[in-house]
Structure formats: C-alpha cells, structure tokens
Image (cartoon, rainbow, N blue to C red):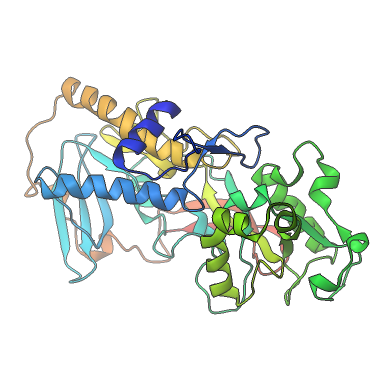
Length: 398
C-alpha cells in the first residue's frame, strides 16, 4: 500500500526529494533506525496537501465535483437508519443549507484542540464528529492522543495555536538541557561538560530519533526537574552546531533552510547561531469515530476517513504514518468499499423536502448548556505553557 501511495503522489506532481541519480531519496524519522521515509524537504505534509488539492480542483474544473466551501456541519440526516445527507451552515451568510446523498463521508480531522495549546487550527473543533456521535455513531479510543516533541514553545498569552517544526530536524539536531537546574545562561555560554544530552544518554541506539512519545515525555521530565530553558522554563534546546561543523552551514541550509527561516521569523532567533528551543504540544489523535474495515461507522452509510476515525495507529503512531493513513483511506480504500455499499444497499429516493431535513429551529443544532447529549472525556488536563495538573478532569464537549 505504501508503495502505491508514493507512486500515486509522484504522478500528482509531489516534489519528493531525489538522489543524484534520480531515484527517490529516503531519510530517518523518529522511532525508526533505518532510512525508510520519503520526504519533500521540510514540507512533506504541505506538498501532499497541495498535490491533493490540485487533483481535486482539476475535477472541479471538469465538472465532476461540486464544492461548497466555508460551510460548517450542523447535522447528519438519518432516514430509516441510513445516513442520507447533511445540514450545514453557510459561514458567510449564516443560512442553513441541506444536501441529500446516498452516503456521507466525514474527513474532518481530530480533537487535539481539547488540549491547550495544540498545533491544530482553531477551526478544527471536532464538531462534525460530535454531530455524528449524537446520531448514534460510536466513538473509540479518545485517550489516544499524540504529543509532538518538536514545536515552538509558547511565547505569550494571546496565541491561538502552536507552530509545528518538522521532526526531520532531529536527524541532525541534538537535544540538550543544562545539567544544573535553574541555569539561565545563554546556550552558547554553557560548555559541553555542563550540557545534558539526555536522549543520547538514555537511548543510545536511537539517540535523538526516539519515537515521538518518548521524546515528549523526556522533554517534560527535564523541565519538571527545573532544567527547562527560555523565559518560561518550558523548552529544551535543539542544537545544529555539531552538524554545521561536520557538514557545513550550506548543507544544513539545503536540508532545513525553510524551517530555519520560519523559526527565525517567529522567534527572532537565528538557529544557525543559537540553538532552537522546542517543547511538546498536542498534535494528532489516534482516537475517533469507530469504523469497520470498510471505513463505515456503525451508522449505515456514514463513512469516516483519516484522523476522524479511530483506526490504524493504536496508542501511538510514528511520524509520516498519519499522512499514509489519510492517503490510503482516500485513494485506495473508500473508492472500493463505498462502491460495494452503494451496490448492495436498498435506498429509497429522497429529497431535501423530507421531514428529516427540517429540524425544529436552531435549537436543534445548538443545545443549551444544561441539556445534552454530551461526549464525556476524562483526561489528564495538560496546559503546555505550565505544569500538568495533579488531578483528572472530566470534560463535556458539545
């Protein structure tokens, strides 16, 4: 499947890195001790999105796909136990709109914003999954949340999200903190003998390329011991000094120039001269709506793809595999499984005049705070600009 995905993306025009002879290049990634990951410099995810969007817009221009942008899902219409359409709100005009269908496919992302702060956009509010949950769709593995170790730390109280830096930086960057708790000297004034390269010492086989959950837990542990750096004390260093001495600044610029430029623009610090500061942040969720092997939820006709469903990753995922899941679901699974559903299921003809498309006013979509139904999570509440609270907190998400 992975080979088919890469070939498909190359055909879309994704500019994967290549060896001198023209073959696709590979690099190491966290949690793997071999170079197995295809990449597009430090922009792999962005380039895959651009390729997918370009292919989609080609179909839009050909008249095979109709787009309705700037809409928010308010309800999934169920008729005779089958998902037969949706009700949305036009975010420009505020009007409600109804769309009938033979099946409904949700590709609406995850709930990482249940944590403060996350790398997700604020619009990623898991409302679509919750609408499905209200209609009876099962929710699975909500505790499985991935914390990404390589994010720019919190820099103020008015930011809405955190910026993710590519995990590829750990190929050449070395993670360290001062050995002495409370050491606030600038990093370039701390000699090698007083630096703690804690990942390299604890995990010599993997070094700085340990899996994301391991890197994240260890970074927080160091900060909890008072070894955190920066103004808040909730950051660790990611240092390229040794890589620059070994390979030269130009080589590092070729590999990570776009990432270093982004970092400098956000922090006003030159990562070629001063080590980057990074800290873990909520990034991706492995839980979601339950689906079977055909990617259909327990609600007939409701299919859920990518991060919105619960499948594939278990309690943790390696870098790059989330992109594989989304691409596999969309390109190689759903075209076949939804076809089987449509061919083998009786569906009476309905229109948006059906009573199921006519709710009883806005209160049908926006319940009061005193009523439900609610989706309840019990989580270790984490504020990534501060310490972990010493209690469990029950959250009701509507």
